Each structure stands twice: as C-alpha cells, then as structure tokens.
Length: 168
Image 1 (spheres, one colour):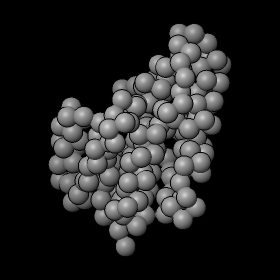
Image 2 (cartoon, rainbow, N blue to C red):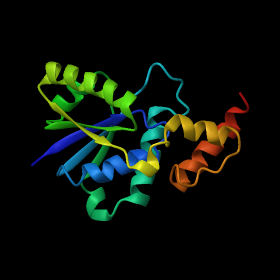
Image 3 (cartoon, rainbow, N blue to C red):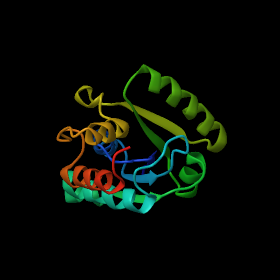
Image 4 (tube, rainbow, N blue to C red):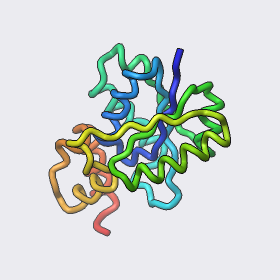
C-alpha cells in the first residue's frame, strides 16, 4: 500500500491544491494532507480553521471513495519527520513553474537526506498555474470574484474573515 504526504499552509485551500490532491490519488493509495505554517507569511486563518476549510473543500470536490483515502491533520516540525512518523512512502509536491521546481527539487534532496523518503513532484494543471493562496487573498481584498480559484465555502470564509479584520 502506497502512502504519501502532501503538505502546505493551505491559507486558504485553492483549486490548485485540490488538483494536486486528486491527481495524487491516481498515484497513491492514501494521501495524508498536512497543514503546516509558513513562518515567513502572516496567516489569514489559524491551523484549526484551515483544517476545517480543507475538509469542507474536500467534501465538495472529491467523490466519497476518493475522500475515504484522504486524511488531514495539522503538523508541526519538519515535513521529513512528519512523513516518517506516518509511515509515508513519498512526499507529494505540486509546482506552478520553474522557480518553484528549483525550490522543490532542493527540498526533495534535503528531505531524502533527512528521512530517505522520495518526493514526487507534479506540475500544476495549466489552467490553475496562476492560482495561489496569496492570489486568492489579494483578489478577495479588492472585491474580486473568487470563482475558479477556490470552492465557494472557502471563498465565503475568506470574505468573512477579511471583513472581520477590516481594511489593511
């Protein structure tokens, strides 16, 4: 049985993330989505809320049989340690372009050195190559339409959170 981890901040989850999850399920039997923190960025949502929104998005986007093969949890620490602790065979990563590929290749080498676990890198689907969590937040901040970037329940949560914290 093959098991992979797919980690990210998912702040918020996007159709790009969901695309990688769906495509990862064509390769691996099970997928553990690890929600971490990117300490170089200010998060819109705390970890628990990101977990809730990811689950909502997966409920909306995955078939029940697919959803049964995906679990989500909040992680702390190194991805390599997390992958090792859950008994993963691989780390799954998605990339939008060559810059991300360079960064992910370096991380893959480091993770292999730390844990012996290989990384599988999937390029994003062309139509989703401009979709990022940062873009979703920026579009929402200026009143743009989030359709096509993130599922509706997530879009609503982003808009509510931005209204709550006010302009800035």
